[in-house]
Image 1 (cartoon, helix red, strand yellow):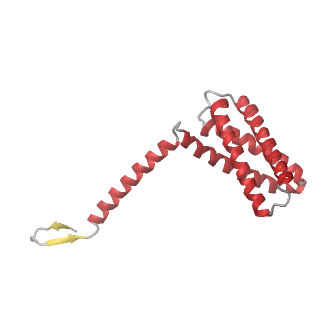
Image 2: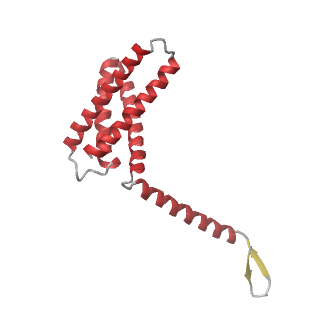
Length: 169
């Protein structure tokens, strides 16, 4: 606790001086660390790109679900088609600008065509893998099938990330 020397030579404690100092030190340290983490997340490091890729993918999935729900009154096929097209186009643009920082290297049209083709290829791979799973293991219960879907989706997502990183962007 700090003290304040007043004219009568009495020592008066100043509560909160030490607390304010500690607060400033902690705030400065946390701010610096967060700034370094933010700087790293914006870097070209492959792990930082993978994190951004997953965040963009998650956000585009949320957007897809919201569009699907909003358009479901027109029928599930229409809602699925429009939701897939819009969420894929938005994801491709976010990958171009944020995930791979390629806005100055890759044109919008190129990103949409190549990213869209990759999305279609991913859909074909995941659909084919699920069809093979149904033939190879027809008696799978719901949980085992859901686990297989998660594994297939993760594999397709990994291939999509690598292809976007190495070929498109």
